[in-house]
Length: 307
Image (cartoon, rainbow, N blue to C red; front, top):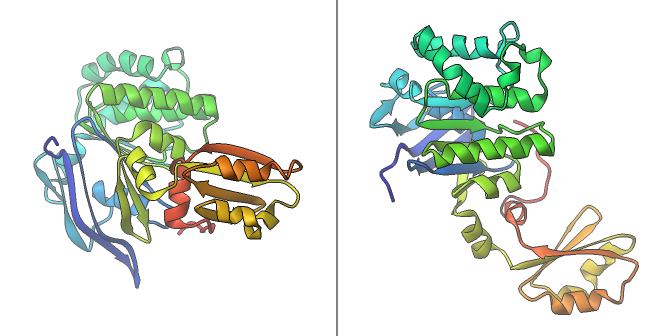
């Protein structure tokens, strides 16, 4: 594995009596997309804030590009690009002006930023919107402008905190295309997301956080194979819940109930599907196990409030 571009060791953060990040370690190699997934309150955003020097850890170390945080925080930040959860675009400036002003924060000359602006707007598919203000843009356009702005300093590493939240499917797919292009250019990405398809599509490695701890890590497909059965049969409709206590249950390796749906997890679905033929009134979905199944198995199905 290539030498780490970004390295976090034994990070701990407490707020009062609550430990939000608990002995967390990870590294990011050049050209790698590391995904961080977990339920609300798992410590994802606090971790990002510590990586940016916005929140001080209680213990542990953060180093990047051969430098140390917080001692070299300005030099580290100069090589980072950030897309936050919330829109931080300046509503009074046009798209091109947002790039210009942001580039100034990095000490870039106006001429240098103006030379980069057309390429950044083209990358974000916003060339025709150069003079439009953020209020005139769709949600997807704003997120792409935020990504373009994060690239104005030509960063080595992008920190993306749920970058596609609130976007429709078309906008999300376009954002994914742009992020894939950056990875192909050799950029590194630290990504937090609640979208399991996004994590599986973009990330070469994943950290699964829960209650501030890393409870699993590895490549998405490796994690699925390690923790899950190969196949899932979902059953729903009137009377489906009774199947969870029926003889069909014995034909699966594991059974879970969520809402009005029964999930049969199995390495060989033939017997389960055959038995379900006796219940034509029910609807079934037969599919391979995926990252969402992994997430729910490791962190549970109970809904958690933001913290």
